[in-house]
Amino acid sequence: MGREGCERKEEEEEEEEERVVINRGGAMVWRLLGTQKRDFLLSPYGDQVKVSELEGKVVGIYFSANWYPLCQKFTKVLGNVYEQLKCNGAQFEVVFVSSDEDIDAFNRYRACMPWLAIPFSDLDSKKALNKRFDIEDIPCLIILRPDGIILEDNTTILLHDGVELIYRYGAQAFPFSKERLEELERVEKAKRENQTITNLLTNDNRDFLLCHSSPSKQVSITSLQGKTIGLYFSAQWCLPGLKFNPKLISIYNKIKQLLTHKRDEDFEIVFVSSDHDQAAFDTHFATMPWLALPFGDPTIKTLTKYFDVQAIPCVVIIGPDGKTLTKHEKEEEEAMKLPKTEHHAGHRHVLTLVSEGTGGGPFICCDCEEQGSGWAYQCIDCGYEVHPKCVKAVGMGMGMPKVDKKWYAPPTDSSNYRSAKVPLGTFVRIPSTCFDLAMISDVAGVGVSTAASIVGTVMFGSTSGRGATGSAVVLVLVPLL
Image 1 (cartoon, rainbow, N blue to C red):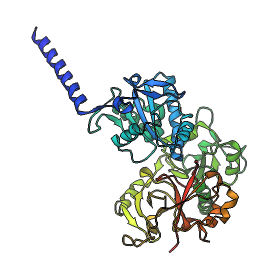
Image 2 (cartoon, one colour):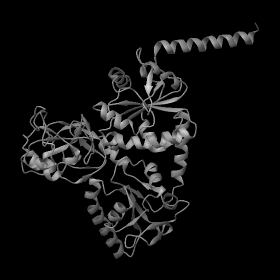
Image 3 (cartoon, one colour):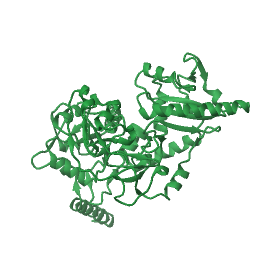
Image 4 (cartoon, rainbow, N blue to C red):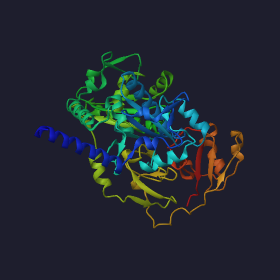
């Protein structure tokens, strides 16, 4: 054997040794997805699919539950991406790991999923997967490399924030490799550098916006060049959006009046709708004094992804030069000075500092009842949120009195809720079909404001946000000081 042959043999032996080390030091993901008694997953039709059939594919392990609205929302998005990739022949598969409350909920939720699932009855596998990937919040999408090998330090997991990347890039993110994501970031950076209001708002079939005074009237997008533009993402079904609308209209009118006195018209707002149908859009837009993209226009989805809008209401400001204006850097700098946790005089649980990227988003402050966005102090137990400026710091244990968690099951007939007196500090489960804020003060048994008496909606320990839909809504009733 020549020198070249010896070197090649040595390289092959080193590669084989590395594979052995990896297999000894880590765990094959397929061993996590299956057990000694179960070597299959469930297909959307209830058939058994061998775990071994996933070998060589990029696999997304999807941790989710039907009772959490954010999961329901992302499942639809992931479903569209999944179908696109399948149509393109991509070697991609998703495995659903359920946190549903019972088998019926699991089956209902899985009915809208086109991918595989861990059987609901296999609690050990679900628990092991949650522990293995350190799952603290849902929805969560773990993308694994095609060979299915995971080192002990998780270094071979492609990414841990699959939800964010699916929202941001959609099917374009496949195969979710470092090289692909770097390429997408370069393209996005170049696009932002060349960003103009025209290329943001137009598409091949439309170069106009709708006018508030007459929806049939078209306003040329070129007329917005050189102006400061606010892109307003909202919807009629969004309660925080409905509360925010009057305030934004007031600000808009004041700015317009000021500019009129200066004989200047360099400011406008464009409504980017997430309404469910044309009728809802028409009713909602009729209350607004600004422009709008047509309902269902494809640019709406493009803008939502481009600006990474994960919660509404949201306002993105575009400067006269067509570039995005942001104050995130200033907010980040100010937030660095704030304590990570606070004990607030108006609440009995510890509050955690959050931002839109760490579990926060638009909210109604439970102290001043004003609209909030960006940074906030949030209770992870019950969803209570306040502006940082509204926190009345107290020593630990000096806030709300601690109350034992006692469940009260009120009558299923919504007409009886008004007579169902519930002790303060009681956890109450109310079917969503009966969820009516007007009834809550009666359920609480006290005449206090909603924001003060109901600190949030909670579903099995995860904050779901206000206006949540699901099989049940859980309320925490607390007394005012």
